[in-house]
Length: 113
Image (cartoon, rainbow, N blue to C red):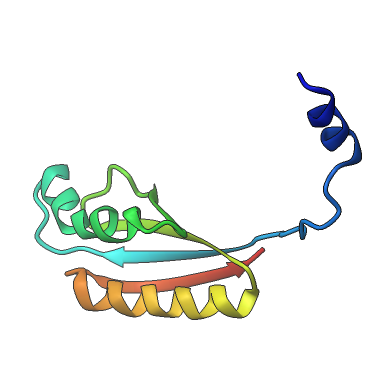
């Protein structure tokens, strides 16, 4: 390691801002009708992972009712610079999910961490 690099590492970089991301969690409880097996259930929620699972600021996972055929619980986690930004993003995601997913939303829970 060069002497110049050692000096840079030793002194740190006070110019860099410290960014503490905020996290928002959106949990959706769905009611399903007409799913005869888990394959049919997964097909209903294919868009959740395909669309929102690829967004860089979102993480999507089925978090409960994994074996149930008549209901599902999915959670979306969002990262952002401010709680207002996260709230707006989760509003947008919730609206798009309601429009695209063919299942009734029974309950919505939100939490900003």
